[in-house]
Image 1: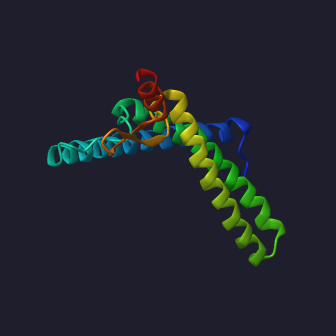
Image 2: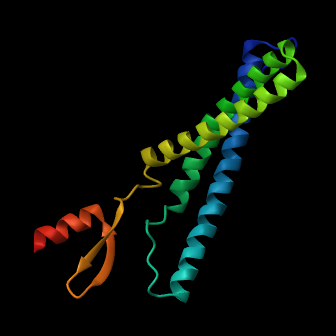
Length: 159
């Protein structure tokens, strides 16, 4: 998108759209395969250990894949293009050592921003839900049980 040359604004926007479509396709495929594998491993674990309980409900495969596609096509693509442009400008004006150091810092910040944006998107789409914090309650007879804060409140209200 920021490559020097006789490219029109429409050409550059086309690059953004094309790369977004490519990233979205990769995100959808990775989300589909990754979620299916993860859910399969959880099912296998439950078959091997019937007492095993997952702390969170597994995300729906297609919804999670669509969330990954959206994240990759929009957020990752935008950050990728922006980072390329910033690095292109910095390369022109900074000494090599300072430029390489700034690239490391920028890419680390990009990684954190990408993680935050995915978690936010996943919560918005409902593909990943945050449950209450697990707590430990002790019932009569010194038997320990784990549950969420909400379950603990319900347990106390029942007594």
